Image: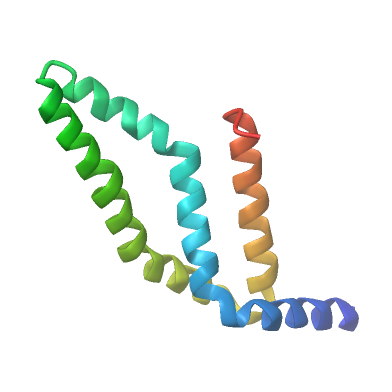
Length: 110
């Protein structure tokens, strides 16, 4: 049983310097997998407007909206990861990526 704790602790120590990058990757993956759903809702809302307005809104949402979301939400995701006890952080990060992979598979992205 002690070797399992040792392995989990070692895994958590390996990923410790990369929590910011991991958080960014989690958010970017969620946006890739579910961004099209949000874009469809925006498209439905702005479809009656002129082409120029639709293009402007699309650029605002995709370039600035998604960019700001990733920049400002990354520290919060990092804090969520840091709330997990150190022993289980590595396992939690691996589990999150496996769940995201499963969700991507269900949406036919893989």
